[in-house]
Length: 344
Ligand code: TXA
Ligand code: MG
Image 1 (cartoon, protein in one colour):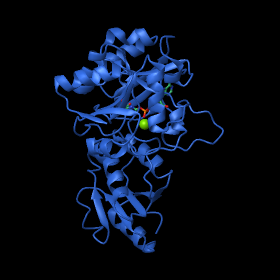
Image 2 (cartoon, rainbow, N blue to C red):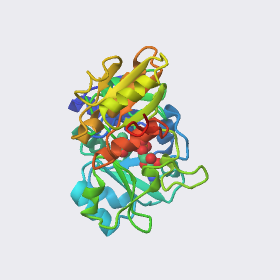
Image 3 (cartoon, helix red, strand yellow):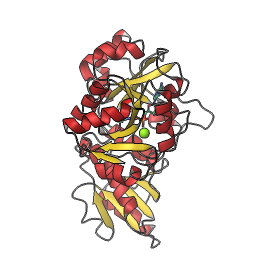
């Protein structure tokens, strides 16, 4: 895997590889993506192989200017209003697809997911290419998304399908883009992100929130977004989310301590409370965007600790930017959230 910087010369190399049908890991403002020419089915296939991604999970295509929006889908009036307010930025819209988008990108669906990233490097790469880039998060399927360049090195440097990776440092949002479907009866939030429900409702007052954002879907129920069905973001070690005060969380942990190597991903300033355990602080619940920025890196660090068997994560309420973090932690823990105030 060739390692590239964000210099003009390296980004030219990156776009040359992408034009050639290769796949490249690139930084975005949300998480690192694994990119291919979205109009080249053979190139897109390599993404699925590299990630071990199920073929029924469609990809997002990334554009760099609004004039190309209608080349790949049929944008509605609401779509243009959302684009005006939130693009470039961490918002993905699901719209009816145009035939030019290969079926492999959309997993055979009649809709396509489109977003315009704000990260200057991602933006430059897409403009240099002159075609849209299909790019899922660059993790191996099911694992926490990569938000630091070292995550890319760890996961992909030996991957035979990945030709290069562009170092863009740390990803600012830390969680994937907000996904809104504009093909359902009412606009519907499928995945929460840095663009919050409250922000979206300023443009779409009738926005609904898909049940799957906060609940496990029954096995036989068809998800609005296939990605909601798959196991996600999970570390190798057993992961349990804890709500309530730090003191009640500590009592909960102590009471069930069976000597397993335990790591506590806590809020900033709580390290002393959990001092009997290895702690990884990941931000402040009063500033949920800090939790978002660090949540995947914290899950990865915990998992990388030698012998780690059990990870507890302090969990903030599912509000504003915290909804995205809660949604990812639900999946990382296989929906194991304990209210420690109630559980003593
Ligand atoms: O922030 C992001 O969106 C990152 C960066 C790299 O741009 N990408 C990303 O892609 O998170 P991925 O593939 O990890 O997540 C895409 C999500 C999946 O849950 C997928 O099922 C959903 O979007 N999706 C894609 N196309 C869809 C469609 N046509 N209808 C419904 N859901 C769709
Ligand atoms: Mg993903």
